[in-house]
Every structure is written in structure tokens, then in C-alpha cells.
Image (cartoon, rainbow over all chains, first blue to last red; front, side):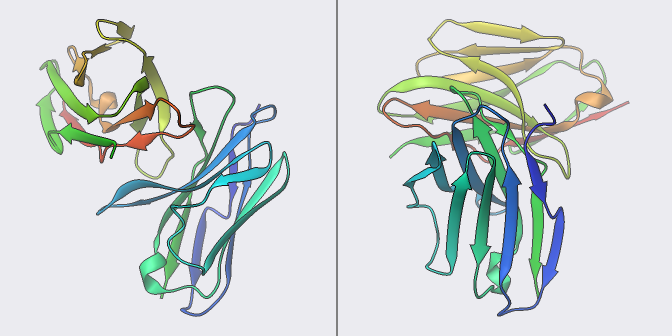
Length: 111
Length: 110
């Protein structure tokens, strides 16, 4: 398996624009997690899915953030409208039992 | 509230100079404690899972230990390629997610 695949690797956008981050989890994993990493706050859980169903989105900072998982092999995290404080590295991770495996991340810069 | 505190924030070692990284945690019930390694520009890479106090796991120059309040990651005779940020995370009982510490940035000089 190629591991968790995220796209794009880097995204630079202007404030107010919509941003969509994509994730393909490891086949067979029934949990999918979206994390955000910054120097100040470290790794923060935004939302996670179990069997494509959102279970806990309490970490989503605002209504500007939304996530979907239309099927077992694809998930998106959307920010609309984006703001400079959203600049961070966003990670997707998947797991089958307890060990979560992470993608390479998307570095988002909002100018 | 579940908390994970890692120390030191940064550590600089000479090649061959052994040391330990600390992870202190507060959880209502521990299902597992995880160690990850993160290289610059990459996602965290899974290293170990520890489940109960007294348990130890080893991988090359790394050994992880667990007590009821903290975990240590011992690095024996480190090499420059061990330079990375090491993250500790706890899996609380009754939850499906991990709570991460902020990590220890390790730099090993030749």
C-alpha cells in the first residue's frame, strides 16, 4: 500500500478564497482523522470519521471549516473563506485499530 | 482534561551521547501510549505503542518505557540520522482519538 496520500502538498491562496484539501486513506482502515499542526499549538485533532461517518468534529475551529467522507477511499477538508490564521500544515491519518498512520501533509499558506 | 507534556522542548546531543526524552501524561484511563518520529516536511511516523506500566519496547537505538504517569524514550549512542522531532501521544480509554504532546526536537551532531 502507498500509505495515506494527501494533495496538494503545498497550497498558497489569498484570504477569502476557498481551499480544499484531499486525502486517500490506507485501504481497509475504518478510521480517518484530520489534524492541524502549528508551532504554537502542535498537533490538534479537527475531526474524525468512522466508517465514513463523522464522529467528533468538536475540534473544527469555526463554521468556515467543513469535512466530508463520501466513500471509504476519499475525504476532503474545506475552508471557506480562508483567513491568514488558517496557515498551518494539515495532516490526514487513518487507522484500523490503534496505530494511526499519517500522510505527508498539506502546507497551507493564506496571504 | 487529558494532557500530555513533553520535555525538553529541544535537545542537542553529540553523536554517541545517550539521553532520554520525557512524556508526562494525565488521563482518566490509558488505553495506550504512542511514540512517533517526525522529520521536517513529513508526517509523523509510528514508532511504538505501550499499554501498561512496566512495559518496554525497543527499536534499534531507541527504547521506550512506561510508568503510570510518564513515558521515557531512551536514545542510546545516537547518530545524526536520529535527528527529528519525537512526539508522544495518549489514547484515553473510551475514546477513538490520540492526544499529542508538542514534541521534543532532537538534534544529533557528528
